[in-house]
Image 1: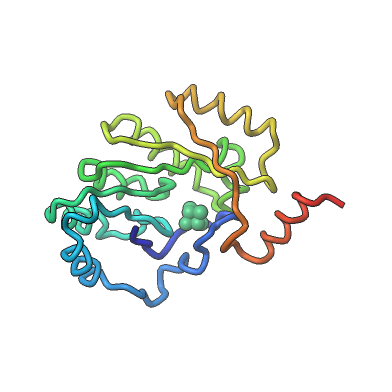
Image 2: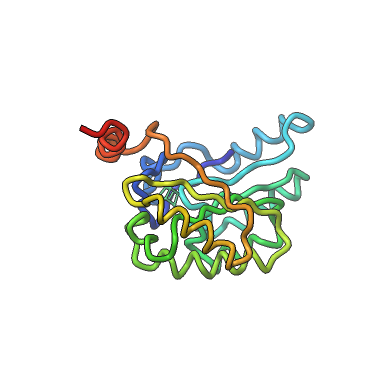
Length: 190
Ligand code: SF4
Protein backbone atom coordinates (compact mmCIF):
# COMPACT_ATOMS: atom_id res chain seq x y z
CA UNK A 1 0.00 0.00 0.00
CA UNK A 2 1.30 3.44 -0.91
CA UNK A 3 -0.13 6.35 1.12
CA UNK A 4 -0.22 9.48 -1.03
CA UNK A 5 -0.26 12.72 0.90
CA UNK A 6 -2.84 15.45 0.44
CA UNK A 7 -6.61 15.54 0.71
CA UNK A 8 -9.08 18.43 0.29
CA UNK A 9 -11.45 16.90 2.84
CA UNK A 10 -11.19 16.72 6.61
CA UNK A 11 -13.28 13.77 7.67
CA UNK A 12 -13.81 13.70 11.40
CA UNK A 13 -12.55 10.13 11.72
CA UNK A 14 -9.55 10.35 9.35
CA UNK A 15 -6.78 7.98 10.44
CA UNK A 16 -4.20 9.71 8.29
CA UNK A 17 -4.71 13.33 9.21
CA UNK A 18 -0.94 13.77 9.59
CA UNK A 19 -0.53 13.40 5.80
CA UNK A 20 -3.49 15.51 4.62
CA UNK A 21 -1.37 18.58 3.87
CA UNK A 22 -0.15 18.19 0.24
CA UNK A 23 2.76 20.57 0.89
CA UNK A 24 4.48 18.44 3.52
CA UNK A 25 7.80 16.93 2.55
CA UNK A 26 7.20 13.37 1.35
CA UNK A 27 8.85 10.46 3.13
CA UNK A 28 9.22 7.90 0.34
CA UNK A 29 10.09 8.80 -3.24
CA UNK A 30 8.36 7.18 -6.20
CA UNK A 31 11.67 5.77 -7.57
CA UNK A 32 12.22 4.03 -4.23
CA UNK A 33 8.74 2.48 -4.50
CA UNK A 34 9.73 1.15 -7.93
CA UNK A 35 12.98 -0.26 -6.56
CA UNK A 36 11.07 -1.94 -3.75
CA UNK A 37 8.64 -3.53 -6.20
CA UNK A 38 11.48 -4.75 -8.41
CA UNK A 39 12.60 -6.89 -5.46
CA UNK A 40 9.10 -8.24 -4.88
CA UNK A 41 8.30 -10.01 -8.16
CA UNK A 42 6.58 -13.26 -7.28
CA UNK A 43 5.89 -12.07 -3.74
CA UNK A 44 3.43 -9.24 -4.36
CA UNK A 45 0.46 -9.25 -6.72
CA UNK A 46 0.06 -5.52 -6.84
CA UNK A 47 0.07 -2.11 -5.24
CA UNK A 48 -2.83 -0.15 -3.78
CA UNK A 49 -2.67 3.64 -3.93
CA UNK A 50 -4.28 5.01 -0.80
CA UNK A 51 -4.08 8.27 1.05
CA UNK A 52 -4.91 10.96 1.73
CA UNK A 53 -6.83 11.26 -1.50
CA UNK A 54 -4.63 9.71 -4.23
CA UNK A 55 -6.52 11.45 -7.04
CA UNK A 56 -5.25 14.79 -5.72
CA UNK A 57 -1.93 13.87 -7.38
CA UNK A 58 -1.96 15.14 -10.95
CA UNK A 59 0.54 12.46 -12.02
CA UNK A 60 -1.40 9.58 -10.51
CA UNK A 61 -2.30 7.99 -13.85
CA UNK A 62 1.35 8.16 -14.93
CA UNK A 63 2.41 6.44 -11.70
CA UNK A 64 -0.27 3.77 -12.15
CA UNK A 65 0.78 3.15 -15.74
CA UNK A 66 4.37 2.73 -14.60
CA UNK A 67 3.34 0.08 -12.06
CA UNK A 68 1.12 -1.64 -14.63
CA UNK A 69 4.03 -1.74 -17.09
CA UNK A 70 5.88 -3.73 -14.41
CA UNK A 71 2.97 -6.21 -14.57
CA UNK A 72 1.71 -5.56 -11.05
CA UNK A 73 -2.03 -5.11 -10.46
CA UNK A 74 -3.12 -1.72 -9.17
CA UNK A 75 -5.83 -0.85 -6.67
CA UNK A 76 -7.09 2.57 -5.65
CA UNK A 77 -8.71 3.91 -2.49
CA UNK A 78 -10.71 7.06 -3.16
CA UNK A 79 -13.58 9.16 -1.96
CA UNK A 80 -13.98 10.67 -5.42
CA UNK A 81 -12.87 14.22 -4.63
CA UNK A 82 -11.31 14.72 -8.07
CA UNK A 83 -13.58 13.20 -10.74
CA UNK A 84 -11.53 14.50 -13.68
CA UNK A 85 -8.38 12.82 -12.41
CA UNK A 86 -10.25 9.69 -11.38
CA UNK A 87 -11.53 9.43 -14.97
CA UNK A 88 -7.94 9.16 -16.23
CA UNK A 89 -7.17 6.29 -13.85
CA UNK A 90 -10.29 4.17 -14.45
CA UNK A 91 -9.05 2.44 -17.62
CA UNK A 92 -5.80 1.53 -15.83
CA UNK A 93 -6.81 0.16 -12.44
CA UNK A 94 -7.92 -3.32 -11.44
CA UNK A 95 -9.92 -2.52 -8.30
CA UNK A 96 -11.35 0.45 -6.41
CA UNK A 97 -12.28 0.77 -2.78
CA UNK A 98 -14.69 3.72 -2.96
CA UNK A 99 -15.69 5.49 0.25
CA UNK A 100 -19.22 6.80 0.20
CA UNK A 101 -19.02 9.15 3.14
CA UNK A 102 -22.71 9.56 3.96
CA UNK A 103 -26.09 10.36 2.42
CA UNK A 104 -25.82 13.57 0.34
CA UNK A 105 -27.20 15.84 3.07
CA UNK A 106 -24.47 14.75 5.52
CA UNK A 107 -21.45 14.85 3.21
CA UNK A 108 -20.40 18.28 4.38
CA UNK A 109 -20.82 17.36 8.05
CA UNK A 110 -18.43 14.42 7.55
CA UNK A 111 -15.89 15.98 5.19
CA UNK A 112 -16.01 19.66 6.27
CA UNK A 113 -16.03 20.47 2.54
CA UNK A 114 -18.81 22.29 0.68
CA UNK A 115 -18.29 20.68 -2.73
CA UNK A 116 -17.59 17.16 -1.46
CA UNK A 117 -20.94 15.68 -2.45
CA UNK A 118 -20.96 17.23 -5.95
CA UNK A 119 -17.58 15.73 -6.72
CA UNK A 120 -18.32 12.41 -5.04
CA UNK A 121 -21.56 12.06 -7.04
CA UNK A 122 -19.73 12.64 -10.34
CA UNK A 123 -17.14 10.04 -9.34
CA UNK A 124 -19.69 7.47 -8.17
CA UNK A 125 -21.57 7.77 -11.48
CA UNK A 126 -18.31 7.37 -13.40
CA UNK A 127 -17.26 4.29 -11.44
CA UNK A 128 -20.70 2.70 -11.87
CA UNK A 129 -20.51 3.26 -15.62
CA UNK A 130 -17.05 1.72 -15.84
CA UNK A 131 -16.19 -1.97 -15.78
CA UNK A 132 -13.79 -1.69 -12.88
CA UNK A 133 -14.19 -4.04 -9.93
CA UNK A 134 -15.37 -1.91 -7.01
CA UNK A 135 -16.19 -2.17 -3.35
CA UNK A 136 -18.34 0.69 -2.07
CA UNK A 137 -18.05 1.18 1.67
CA UNK A 138 -19.04 3.65 4.34
CA UNK A 139 -17.35 4.28 7.65
CA UNK A 140 -20.12 5.12 10.07
CA UNK A 141 -19.33 8.27 12.02
CA UNK A 142 -21.52 8.00 15.14
CA UNK A 143 -20.94 11.68 15.94
CA UNK A 144 -22.81 12.61 12.73
CA UNK A 145 -24.96 9.68 11.60
CA UNK A 146 -27.96 8.34 13.49
CA UNK A 147 -29.46 4.87 13.03
CA UNK A 148 -32.10 6.49 10.83
CA UNK A 149 -29.38 8.06 8.67
CA UNK A 150 -27.72 4.64 8.28
CA UNK A 151 -30.98 3.00 7.24
CA UNK A 152 -31.61 5.83 4.79
CA UNK A 153 -28.07 5.49 3.40
CA UNK A 154 -28.49 1.75 2.80
CA UNK A 155 -31.75 2.29 0.90
CA UNK A 156 -30.53 5.37 -0.96
CA UNK A 157 -27.41 3.67 -2.39
CA UNK A 158 -29.66 0.99 -3.85
CA UNK A 159 -31.35 3.71 -5.93
CA UNK A 160 -27.90 4.38 -7.42
CA UNK A 161 -27.51 0.70 -8.30
CA UNK A 162 -25.29 -0.20 -5.34
CA UNK A 163 -26.57 -3.35 -3.64
CA UNK A 164 -23.53 -4.37 -1.66
CA UNK A 165 -22.51 -1.36 0.44
CA UNK A 166 -20.07 -2.41 3.17
CA UNK A 167 -20.52 -0.63 6.50
CA UNK A 168 -17.38 -0.12 8.56
CA UNK A 169 -17.21 0.76 12.22
CA UNK A 170 -15.17 3.83 12.99
CA UNK A 171 -11.92 3.16 14.88
CA UNK A 172 -10.35 5.55 17.33
CA UNK A 173 -6.75 4.59 16.50
CA UNK A 174 -4.85 7.40 14.77
CA UNK A 175 -7.74 9.88 14.79
CA UNK A 176 -7.27 13.43 16.00
CA UNK A 177 -7.42 13.76 19.81
CA UNK A 178 -10.59 15.91 19.86
CA UNK A 179 -12.51 13.39 17.82
CA UNK A 180 -11.24 10.55 20.00
CA UNK A 181 -12.73 12.27 23.04
CA UNK A 182 -16.07 12.69 21.23
CA UNK A 183 -16.09 9.00 20.29
CA UNK A 184 -15.32 7.88 23.82
CA UNK A 185 -18.12 10.11 25.14
CA UNK A 186 -20.57 8.40 22.77
CA UNK A 187 -19.39 4.94 23.78
CA UNK A 188 -19.58 5.73 27.51
CA UNK A 189 -22.57 8.04 27.99
CA UNK A 190 -22.68 9.73 31.40
S1 SF4 B 1 -11.21 11.51 2.44
FE1 SF4 B 1 -9.96 9.95 3.43
S2 SF4 B 1 -7.93 10.86 3.61
FE2 SF4 B 1 -9.34 12.54 3.18
S3 SF4 B 1 -9.87 13.34 5.20
FE3 SF4 B 1 -11.42 11.81 4.63
S4 SF4 B 1 -10.72 9.90 5.54
FE4 SF4 B 1 -8.96 11.31 5.50
